[in-house]
Length: 255
Image (tube, rainbow, N blue to C red; front, side, top):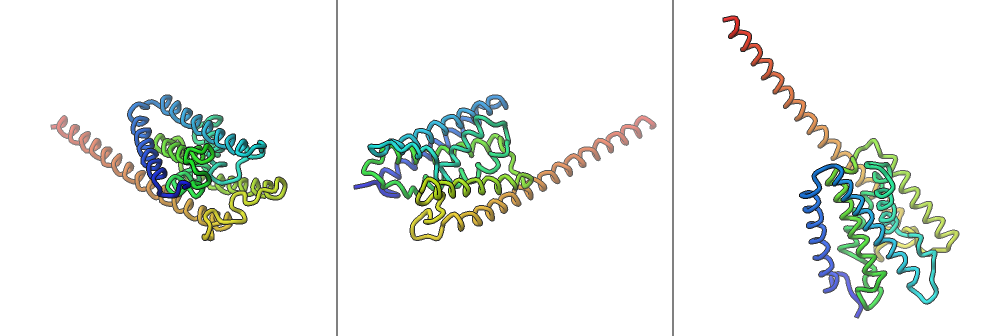
C-alpha cells in the first residue's frame, strides 16, 4: 500500500520536521550571536537547501529507464522557489531583491507541502528518492526562511513591492516556455489545479498570494511605525528628565 497523507510515515515525518525546525532555530539563536556567525548559518542552510533540491531534480531525471535531463528544469512554484532561494542566499548579499520575492512563497509552499504532500503516494516506498527528497526540500525551504526572518537577513518592506511582481511574472513566463516549447503538461499549475478538486490554478493562486503579501506588508509597516513611535516617546521622556535634572542642578548651585 502506498503512503498516504496523514498516514503513519507522513506523521513520523511531520514530527521529525517540526523537531528539526525548532532545534535548528533555537541552536542558531543561542550560538550565532555575531553578524558574521549568523551569515555563516544562513549560507550553510542555503547550501543544504540547494543540495537537496538538486538531488531531488536528479532523482526525477533518472526516475525512468531513459534519463530525462529536462527534469533538471523546475516546473512548480515550490521547487523553483527552493532553487531561487538557495541561490539568492549563496550568491547574493544580505537583503537582496530576490529574497524579497522568494521568502514568502518558499515559506508558504514549504509549510503546506510538509503537512499536505499531495505527491506522497506516487510509490509504495516513502523513501522513494523523488518522494522523500521532494518532502525534504519543501521542509528545508521553510526552515531557511524562518532563519532569514530570525536573523533579519531580509527586511520586509513595502518599498520592495516590485520584487514580487517581477518574480511572479518570471515564474509564469517560465511556465509558458515549458508548456509551449518543451510540452510540459501542467507547469506552475497553469492548466490543472495544485490540488485536484479545487480551483487553485496559477491564475487563482496569484491574486490570493498578492493579497496576502500586501496584508503582511501592511501589518509589518504598522508594527514598525508603532515601535518607532514608542522609541520616540521614550527618548523624549529621557530628554525631558535630563533637562529637568539640569534645571534643578542649576537652581541648587545658585542657592
